[in-house]
View 1: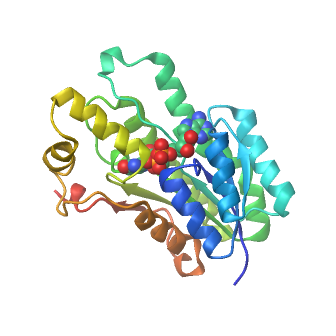
View 2: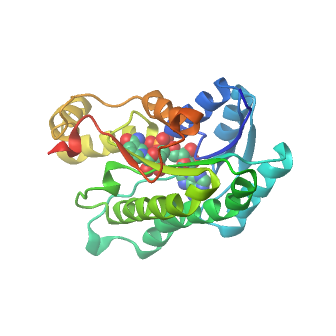
View 3: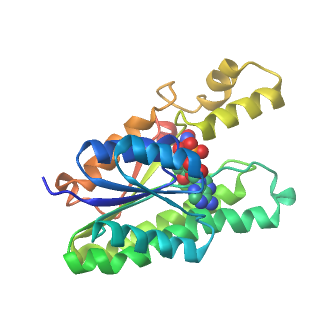
Length: 252
Ligand SMILES: NC(=O)c1ccc[n+]([C@@H]2O[C@H](COP(=O)([O-])OP(=O)(O)OC[C@H]3O[C@@H](n4cnc5c(N)ncnc54)[C@H](O)[C@@H]3O)[C@@H](O)[C@H]2O)c1
């Protein structure tokens, strides 16, 4: 098997960490780019990869992440745009600075990183980009305007890049998960329990999983498995697609 060099953003935690572990377990060189230095370094050490501290809201930091990976491994084959965060507030109170940061981290950074890795992928006529969007890239919910706008935009970036990469052996796909068991979601469960004055289990069963056909929270390795498929040669004909992993949430 060919050893690939993969950049995974936001891999100090949650879904990104699981993807980084999966890619490393398949023998690939993994570069974790994250704001959280302590967890990022620990994760890189655990998987035998590298860590680059990056604030995805900053253009120069994105550029530096790609050049550091290319310098360390001599090539880049795979980019996983995963880093992100949630902020909940009614639209009329939504802080303008938070809106700016959300779009920079979850839409502009994936664009910039795609742009910066593009010449590497194009030159070798092989590349894989997977964007971790959300079911909130496809549908909306109230009070998450920054997140939902960024994730809808990310699907547009995915499809455009797929069309431009097709002739160069580059595939670009997005994943649209519902609730995945990570610190991001644990925070949402705790916040909802406080707001509604109910137990965490009630939040999960009565609020979060209400629209889902399969009543379960998704595990991070389920997302990682799909990413591994898309990054392998088995996924060579899959591009421009937005895969829902949502327990049937958006089927209705
Ligand atoms: N957990 C879910 O239910 C769920 C569902 C759908 C989509 N997603 C998406 O999956 C991705 C990962 O989410 P998660 O649940 O694993 O969250 P998480 O909070 O566990 O991990 C997110 C990681 O992103 C990093 N990050 C945040 N802002 C950053 C910045 N400015 N620069 C660099 N790194 C930054 C954090 O440090 C953290 O390590 C996000 O894009 C999220 O929108 C999550």
